[in-house]
Amino acid sequence: PILTAAPPILDFGEVTSQQRKILPLTFQAEVGVEPQELRLDALPESGCFTVLSAPRTVTNKPFQLMVEFHPKLVQIYQTYLQVRTQSTQFQVPLRGRGVRPVLHIEPANGVLKLGSVTHGKDGKDQTTEKLVIKNDSQFELKYSLEAVVAADPNDTGPPPFTLTPSTGTVEANGSKTVTVTFRPHRPLTVFREKILVNVPNQKEPTFVYLYGHCFKYQTYALPSMDFGPFLRAKVEKPMALVDSLSVGLGSGANAETGEFEFPKAQQTSYSLKFGEGERTQYLLVGASVPPGYPAAPQNTPA
Image (cartoon, rainbow, N blue to C red; front, side):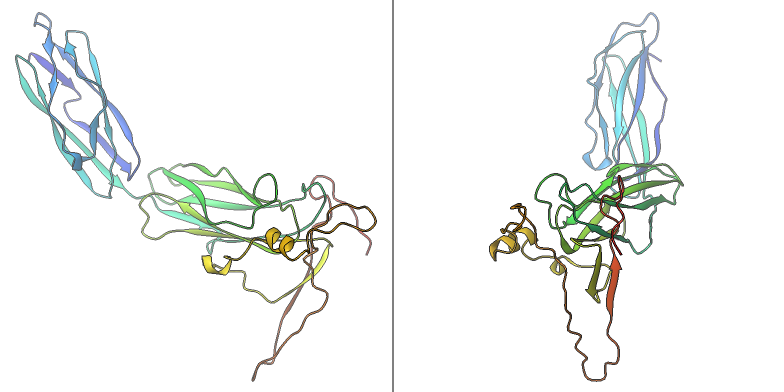
């Protein structure tokens, strides 16, 4: 042959849908043959194959052409790359299959309760939990953690909830542990955040629901609440800081120190109302992690 292509069939194998894979296609002219002016016909857009390199004159020295496969759907793709020169023409089959990785998370219901933090002036107190992203398939899985319902923001610095690493790749039949950190900068009865575990081409979306509390004092009590999945409407309300300032609660100063103080967010009295036929009501009583946790936890008086 005047001109050869290697491999004769460019097979990309199985590629996670909406991800990319690039392979080389090597052309070489036979010894003693005049240089071949390489020309390529356009590939169909629906085929999900793209030639990334510009064609050029090919001699008896190998020339690599880079070809990309970017499957959009879970299916088999195949087409032909039409190669032409002034002396010959032929086709190189292009093949590939788009596949869907299988995503699971732990905890399975997606709910992570980060507990309660005692508010400190420096805003360094924090708690952590683990989220495990599992790939139960033989293909690699790329993920991105995206807030779809954000928690009330901190007044300065990073948001109350941070997830590390927020993007990454989970190998076939493997898992990756994500550290979720809750570091609030002000007292608030409940911080909530809804996170999308964004993995391409999943049949159903997977969400993570984060909960945390922050109080001025270590011991607290809360009316009964459902720590479960929630919709956007459940947390769409004015931000706590704006709320406080607008009614004058957060704009005062401590009478002794003169320093700004946030409202303490802790109730001191509760009204439990029993409806007709109701026999039980619940009040959640708990304790925050010690002030200074985790770097330098302090013992507080009993």
